[in-house]
Length: 183
Image 1 (spheres, rainbow, N blue to C red):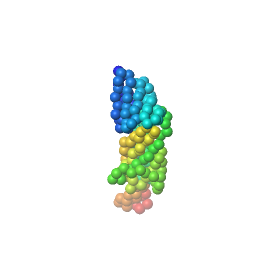
Image 2: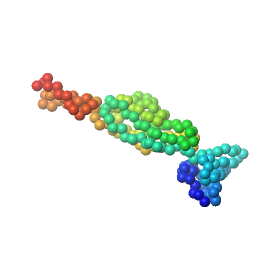
Image 3: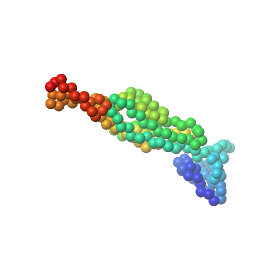
Image 4: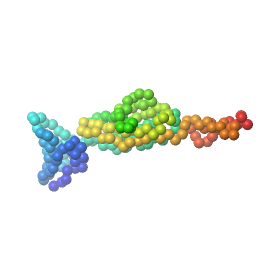
């Protein structure tokens, strides 16, 4: 007999089902509901309490995790996730930020895209340094949590230094512009 496909096993375990197989059919149980599927099926018929319908293992799969953003103060930071749903059920998104514990973000202040696949912070300010974000991606069958990504500021939009009476202004680059008027 064939083993239960990985997609099914992952979905059943995530939903709390007990499952097993006999010959080429396999069964899953949760409370009073029972499910039966064929190894090649993408759906299982279910029965119980006078209801009938189908269930699918085609839950959310994250294909591209959010990555750390590195950039300058004053820039726009974006965090993006790419996810799929094998059965084309709609995906929904909820970004979260770590503030002692994970909490849902909302579109306010410098944050936008809290319920989309891309979270945007604009403009980035020094106080944003080290902020951590992740996203919950949900469809009809399950919710998957992405890995966390950090906001890392690599420099300010403008640096002004005064050394030996020379004023140096650096803008979005490591090449200084020297104001020698004070010499």
